[in-house]
Every structure is written in C-alpha cells, then in structure tokens.
Image (spheres, one colour):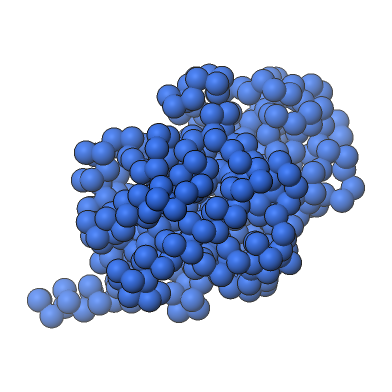
Length: 408
C-alpha cells in the first residue's frame, strides 16, 4: 500500500504544471487580500507553472511592505510549500495599481535601489521563493493619482534597478537560479514624453526572464463608447477602437527588441461593466455610446472602495464582474449562454463576447472559454512563452476558463 501511495505521488508530480512538457508558461496571480474566500488549498497547482503572490506594495519609502504582514507570512509559507510540491514556482509581485506610489523615487538613486533589492533578497531567502515580479504601474507615466512620476528618467532608472537586481540575485543565489519578471503595459514604456526607445526597451528585456503583458483593461467606463476589455484583435472597422489588443501588444514588444520567448499574454478572468446610452440590440455593434466616467456596480463582491493610500483617487465601484459571478449571479446560464433578460453577442473582429441587458442598459465585456481558447491558440502560433492570468480566484467553480487554457 505504501508503494502504491508513492506511485500516485510520482504520477501527480509528473502531471503537475500545465505545458511543462512543451516549456509553455502559465502564470497565475494570487491576490493576498482574499483571506478565507480563496485559500491556498483552492489553487489548482497542476495547471500552473508559476504563482505570483500579489502584492507587496510600494507606498512609502524604498522598502516594500505587505498590507497584512502577519497574514502574508503565514500564507506565503503555505503557498511556497504547496507549490513546490507540485513543481510550480512562486514569485512575490511588488507594486500593483494602488501599490506603486514610491517606485519612482526609490529607483532614482543607487542607495534606495539597494534597500529595495535587499528586501527582495531577504524575502527569497526567508520564504524560499523563486524570484521577483515587478508590477510598477507605470514607469514614466501616471497610473494611480498619488504615484510619483519622472517622465524623463523613470524608464532609465528602471533599467538600472533591474541590472542591479539581476546582479544581486545571481551573486547570492547563483547565476540564473532566481527569476525576474515584470508586468508590462501593452505599449511597453509610453511615458508622458513619448514612447521609450527600442534600445531601452530591448535592454530592459535582456534583464528579465519574462514580461507578463497586461492585455486587458483596454476599454472601460472611462471611454465614450463601449468596447472589449481584452480583445484578441483590434477592430479595424468600428469607430471607437483604440487599436490596442492581445495581438498588438505582443507585436509591439517584439518589434522593440524583446524576443517572443520572453513574453506572456495576459488573460482576464473577469469582465468590465458600463452603462450604454442606447439599445445595443439594434445594431449589435460592439462600440456604441455609453455613459462615460460613471462606473456601475459590478458583481456582488464589488463595493464602493477608497484607495487607503491615495486620497486623490475618488471612491467608487470598479464595475468588475468575475467570470464565476457571471454564472452564479445569473448573467450567464452556462459558460457560453446568457440568461434572460441578458443577451450574448460574439464579436468576430475582436474575438470576444459581450452581454447586454435591455432593461437596465448594462453592458459587460468579458472573456469566456471560446475567447480564452482563441488567445491561447494565438499565443502558441506566435511562439510566445505562454500566458498570464489575472486572477486565479475569478474563474467559475468548475474552472471553465482554466480548462480552456489547458485545452481540456
């Protein structure tokens, strides 16, 4: 009986980590604010090659911190131990939308960069993590309202930070033993002074194991028209398209000198809601006039939220619908079918679904198994490293989107 148990353990290990046999990466971001709603034990480790623990935040000074240090310490230990049993790697992700306030000032001097690097080395040593993921949103460009920004120097300073971080991790843990990745904008480093040079983008790519491209949040309530949250392709016919997409993002990074083998394309396990001004059933066009600047409530998890680190950011709803909530709250009756009064439309140009409620004029752009499969197939065709998921907790209870990633 003991030998049989060992055999089962070996078999489970050999099957762990999706795409391992083909060297394809599946990165899943695991938010550290979920607590008991989504514990480590719920993670389907066999389907991921990397779990990114999000986030350690940069809100004051040069040293990152966890919003709940005691909880994160306990959770990280469990996460690393369980992930490593499944041959999956764990990286601490530093930054995030509301956690990038002091990146610019930290990156501006060698002494403060060293403080940042020393903290990350200590975390790797303490928890046995496999590297560092930097989610600075965004070098040289305003993200959240309180972020420090130096449009002229941020990107160059970011390169200095990465070079020093690479040198330090190689020295302490062995050359190439620990990974360094970043979450990247769809157009790399588009600062207030214009796009960074290809030479600078290429140099940054040389310091990284991966760029996880955030190919979502392409459209939302900030626009005058409805549009896809995460299009595979940009529409070339409808007015309102900004030309950004999964495809354009990959092409942009490659054209600027970062090899496809270092890129992952982002997959959104959530959708964004807005309020249309018209009955979208009449034309069934994806881009139609909407109420701009006012975000409706999303799913039942969405609540009025005020950034605790930035009073300049107005409190409000996010408008986000987790894919699982679309099913559990009756927007969808199945992963591919809307439930009345909602109406589902598939947009062939962008390869994305959207739903509309004619009673409330609510519009939701999201991803489903059909659109996820299309992106995964495209990623394979382009020969990129793999895919990245934000975030692992937002799937349905049956894991419909992750099944589409795996092809099962």
